[in-house]
Image 1 (cartoon, rainbow, N blue to C red):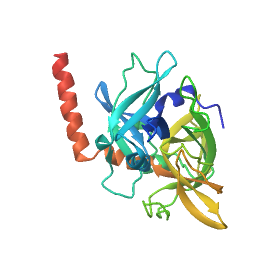
Image 2: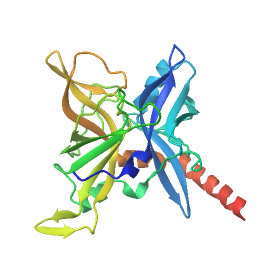
Image 3: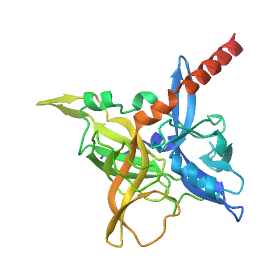
Image 4: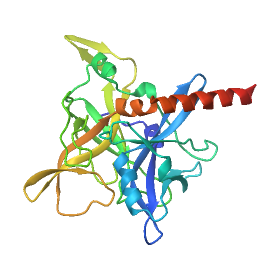
Length: 285
């Protein structure tokens, strides 16, 4: 695995809420996606749906707080009501989206571009499969950072890409997902997961150079992992407050990037982007 570009960490923010003690409690990871519209972008913050669901249960004010770095290195919080988060029409998809773009004059962040998405076509074209290197960027709840967000990088490899749904014991049931050999931990829920193509790929019997530098593709969103508890294998969605005597089996579950794209291309999102683009263009003229 080559060194992960530092810019990757800038697409990540931490999701939090206020608990009964009126204190901020970290709940998971979110990341920014840019949806191009000509010469401008619509920007969305994405996380796992179960992160927002847990906040809905535990929050004292029904607000989602976003912990994000400023240009000066300090952290601050921005607020969005739980009711503003939106989901896939398919209730088995563990993803949540909100339209939100922090002020780039104040905050230190960068969005992923949807062209980075590892769709089914991109996976086939690049011969992506079991053994390819992956990594994720997100919250390590034991050390989130005192004066600024400090996302960690967790590495591994693709363990399984299959057209069969993955059976889970979570509320989402059987889901479309990839399996990766990487220890997902509490706080990494909602983290973006990337596949590293390197500078050379094998297509059939041919080795093809991809250019002068490594290539990264956005594989999906971290959902959870399997634990062994009392000699039985169970699936656990990740939580920043995971406790108990459990042994992580080392297999993480990733919601495919295409599922987030499906949310963003729902008719309501398309219509909103049209209105937003028209409003932007009118202000320019």
